[in-house]
Amino acid sequence: MYFCIIIDCGEMNIKITYRRTRRLSMRVVSNGDLHISAPRFTPKRAIDQFIRDNEAWIQGAMQRQLEANRKRLSFYEQLPLETKELARAAADRLDAMIKPMLLKYTELMGVHPQKITYKPTISRWGACNKKTGVISFSTYLLLLPEWCVEHVVVHELAHLVEPNHGPKFHALMDRYYPRWKEARKATRALIHNS
Ligand SMILES: [Zn+2]
Image (cartoon, rainbow, N blue to C red; front, top):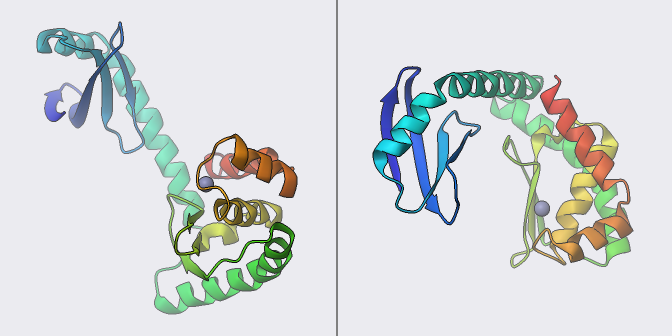
């Protein structure tokens, strides 16, 4: 259930989810919206009060979220992709880096992707459709050190075997790219500390 209310720090979207919980909780999500989790049948006025009581916290959390978004943006802005030519040249550079990795790991892992595409996605490094065998990589991988790119390549190839991020998936990662946790951490740190 979604609705919008106005509180002192300006207009924001507030999403309230009623669930089996004993207390009210809230968090500010990456787009700046406020998500509230409430016990079922909580009256609206109790939620309004909860928001009013936590106004200072909400403002602080929104500020931190804005700052994090600004950092994230400045990270991606290091690779300008505004024109078709820039995007094409970047995709070619990434393709040259990724091809040898694909050769190595498709053979090692015994997997056969049908098609590889490159898109300037900032929300995810890669995507794999197990059914169609199509893997797409973010052109922004060019901003990562090679060993972190390799981690993403192995991650997406592993999805050709195992679609979910469960124990089976992690076992594949342990086997074919033992430094996966370290690579994931280094990648996140790059974005948040740029
Ligand atoms: Zn995944």
